[in-house]
Image (tube, rainbow, N blue to C red; front, side, top):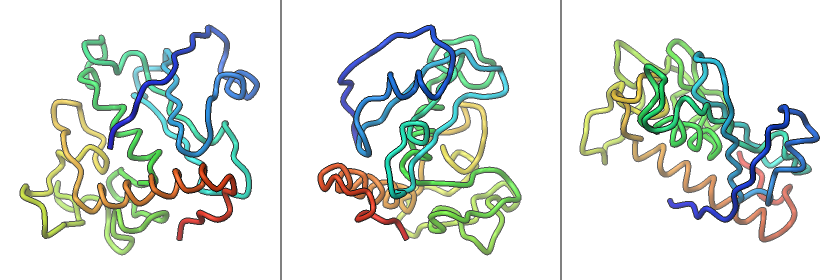
Length: 180
């Protein structure tokens, strides 16, 4: 998957519904990334409309900590891997912290197992050429230097969700692309 940068806008406004509605561009298939000064605790956050009855810009964006950009000052998140992590959430993938199971899009983390068991990702994919470890960009919240891959099942689910986003944009009817 690739994204094309279509426009850049700048604002020093506070994070409010009105400002987001003004800055947000596009609908379902348009990824809007807002780079903000966030606390050291957060590298980013993704919100994704779940193909609800109506599109709401306040539920479809990525907030990225400026300190999590490549070469930044953040001690753990400074190699640029926070954005792919948040894009995975925007593309429908859910849970990633130890001890929690996935409720939405259950294929990304097995619902009957904890997300991580003994430092290994519970879900495995037979097509993988690498071992599913804590190097996964989504399931673990780890420093950038420890994360670099998604499982093939995660990639499949993200592509499927992306197709639904594109279809919803093309049809102009968000209710027709319901995710199950």
